[in-house]
Length: 497
Image (cartoon, rainbow, N blue to C red; front, top):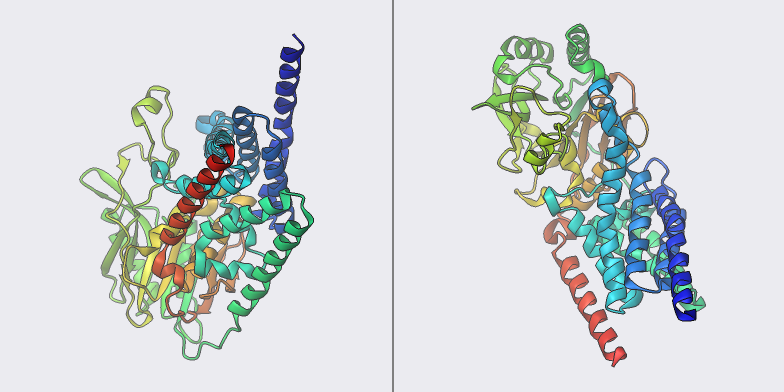
């Protein structure tokens, strides 16, 4: 009886650890934009590792990892209800369920390494590589959702430049490693963790170098109409937003831009019926080519596309978005959700969205070749390696779906990481902002703020030679993490004998 009482007491204690784990997870999410508090994030991840060390069973450890992850994703993805409130009468009821469901679902990716590390008695040596592997899996399973990677916490310090070497998943692994070292509470290990952090920041500052002037660089104009999502498709508002973009396109400047970029779905009509609108845009742009986002239909399937409109008003190239937003542009397990009366938020009532064949380059003449990224595609590091190396990255997005707080800034930060990883400048035209130009080291050279209407002219920064990450991708990290995991399991097996 006494043993049973003690066992129940221990179970009660770990159960009450769960609210603490969730709170610490939320604290760890403060490393994400717009908060960008790196050292609070590291401390909270260290506390999460300490809770793992104190867990009395694999079950307790798994629940701790799940609670920590739920708290993390609940704050990091606190913008999730925003898309449901665009048509609140139809979709608003789903908003709280979406945040809870997505946060708890993604947290399963963190529960598994916590459970496995305890199950195999591998301790922190096993938890860290398994945790990093789980994050890589999160970016792949069911087409992936790698939003809010812990590695983004390095954004405010020069260590962010290491993304050009090890990628964002690699920076997540480094963060987990430092947190685990702090969780040991051994003075020597804490000192080493501090030294590693300082070294990352110091070497990152050296890697960032100085920005050389871009002599004779092409000039690009980014158009930002600031069309609120609930007004964007309103027939009474469509002429206002269209004319605003045409006026910005025609605005005089010296020098005239060499390229004009409109945002995702900036033209509120199908390409199939857009001849008149395209003629107006071409007349406003003159000889300057325009890249703009719109939808098109082919064989009863709709595509979220970007087109190149040349100086004569001819559509010369089309790119179809290939990485669709789950629960937004397509539904996983469609039959299940259809029976529940749930449809994709951005789904057309007259047909389904289709995905394009994959990444492709747009030839933009004197500017060189661009890799287009429509909205959500910029959050996938692996999607940028499916073509020949472009001259620059070009993101068209409509962040009005994400509201006015955390979502747009997180999306912006993730786009910045893609520029650093690839060593390429990135141009970003966003409907409601933030439209921006990043150089090849992720430094913002021009921008137009969130919630503003206008345009910005900026020089196209120079590209760098291919980075280590652009050549290797995540393969070396994947091999390293698997080897570290197997080594930790082998070590634990030997010790248990």
